Structures are given as structure tokens and as C-alpha cells.
Length: 454
Image (cartoon, rainbow, N blue to C red; front, side, top):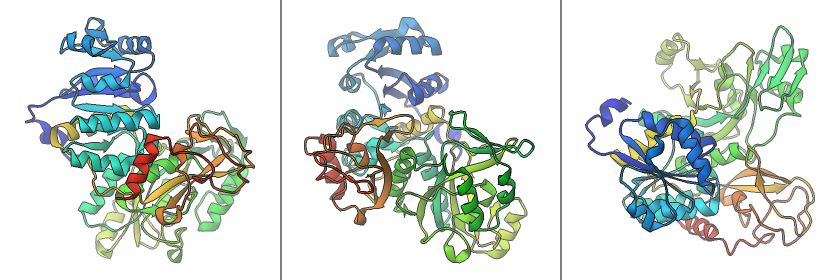
């Protein structure tokens, strides 16, 4: 897509408000906005306004334009060119913005903020994947009813993968699988035989045995690799949540409840994420899935990027494309197309401009195709308080599972369990149900329930 040609005649500008702005994703977006010609930062919100001020100054925003506002009266008194800082997220919608970017990760705050903005005619760009996994279908519906945009954002894997999937749909390609690599790589040094897991833990291990399964010879190779790295591998909540979002928009279903996580090189993906009858690992086609990237020390990372596996339906055409170096299965029946990146807030202005200036983003057809739930890893006594924590947004004591809607029954959505107290003991291996926790008082649970009715 030629974005410059698409937007060059626009007379509009995006006026952006960000909730959860000072760290991580929000920081990367704040750093990029000043470089985007059709976009202005209007307001940022954090419970710590002094942090907002320091971050804006650090990035290079003019301090003379920055105004801290405590209420609506002070907002009304501020210049239209000012960059506002507020501590109450409900004030963001009163600042004259066209675009709300929500990146708190707090389901209660983000769902309330999104609904309020959509009903006020403000476009919403959702970074908080936890919220979208629970009530994305309803938020898409509310956006459509109010003639505004609700969108996931480029820079995070779900939107990037959806863009890749939509490209395939436009071209009439059959997608067998869509997915991403997990956030960190397994890196093997052929010279020293040392394996490094790049999750920041500093985990390193001498592993000369990797040479024996370095070349892919079929699914037995995957079993041997997994045996070697199994103590580092896990089912990651953030991965399953992101595939949940893609599933709900595309209709693709989970490959299995815990996803597959093969330890694989990019060059092997078209031989792995294909049906079992063709030598792959899939028991069905049309799925979402995740892999661990395996590479040598001097090879580029997949960077938590995204891929699709497509069927090769014209043998002669794909022979030509194979000659160009594209990743194809040994049988020639499948190909892998991929984006080896997700650049966080650096990319997000693309989604905001497409939404604000062209109305592109909403998916009113979004439905709860799959649901993220949690299974007890150990016996959990009555009174246990469940808490989302850490970089992977995990819940201690639970392993996530991604289920097709028909198999969900009375299971409780994973990210509604944050702060919940178990009302009875849950045995290891049992899922957390709505009988185990009281979700009735949560407004976002009501949104989830309405979404199930769509």
C-alpha cells in the first residue's frame, strides 16, 4: 500500500490522547508522534503526572506547551495548541481529541474508556490486548453503531498479522495457518555449541546435541529440539491472548488449547504448520498458532514477527516463485509469507491515520470465536487471590489455554480473573470456572456476556 499517496490530499489531522503513556508501548508512540506530519499529541494520562512531564521533556516536546489539568474547567482554559496532562482517564475524552489510544493493560479502565470515547464519537485504538480478548466483539459493534472506528494497532502482532491475513484474502489465497513467533529466540552458536535463550534471564547452556537436530528431518526433529530446550519453554499468556484477538476477527481457530510452540527456523515453517497428512503438525487447517524461533548466532531474529502459511495452487507459478528464494515446503504444496517485525508505537501512527482520516479499522463482524481461559497448575486453596503480573501478563498458578467458543462452557475469561478471589478450592489440572470466582460485579464481564450474544 502506498500510504503517502493514500493520505497526501487529506485536510484533516489526528489529535491524539493516550492513556497509559509513560512506559513501554506508550513511550514508543510518544517518541514517534512528533515526526508524523498529520498528527498532533493533545493529551496524555497517567496516575503519575510528574512522570508524564519528565517523559515529554526527555523526548523533546516543548515544555512551554505542556499544561497539567486537574479538571474540565482547566482543560477548557488551556490553549488548543497545548499538550495536556491529566491523571483521571475520564478527562481525556473532554480534551478535543479525535483518537484515543488505550495502553494501560487494565481491563476495567480500558473498557470503560473505550466505551465512553466511542459513544462520544472518538475513534479508539486498542493496545490493551487483555481488554480486546474479553470484549473486542462488543467494542467493534459499538463503534459500528456510532459510526466511528475501533481498531487494533500496527506495531503489535495482532494487527500486523491481520494486515498480512487481509492481504492474502484480497488475493484469494487459502490460509492454512496464521501465527507469530514467541517474543524471544533460542540462539545457538555453532562454534562454541552454546545455546542462549534471549528472554533477558541470561540463560545459557552448553548444548552440543543441538547439532544432531539442527537440520529439519520431520516432526521427530521437533520432538528432539523440544526435549533439549523444554525447561525454558512455556505457554505464554501474551502469546495466546494475541492469537485470541486474531481468531476473533478472522474466524481462524486455535491449533490446540495450548498452541503448538515448535522450536523452528523460519526456513522450516512451510513444512511444519501444515496438515499431518502432508508431514506437518496440524490436525486441522485454518488455525492460529505460535512457534519458538531457533537461529544461529549470526542470523537475524524473527523479532516476534508474524507469518501465514498458504496453499500453492498453481505449480508452475510457484516454481517460478521458489526460484526467487521464497520459503516453501519440500513438497511444493505450501508457502510461508512473513513479516519479521513488530515495531510497537513506532508503527502505530499508521493505524491512527488510517482510522481518523479514512475510517479504516472497525470489524463489526468480530465475534468471540475463541476464549482465553486458565487452568490450575497446582492445587489452589479457597481464598487464593489471582493477580496478573510480569512482562508476559501471566497469572501465578495458572497456565492459559485458548479454546473454541463451543468448548468454553462456564469457564471464566483469563483476564477477568485479575484480582478475583477463589470461592472454593481448585485442583491442579482443573480450569477456573465462573462458579469458582464471582465476576458478577464487573462491568467488563457484562460486556463479555453481551459479546457472546452477538
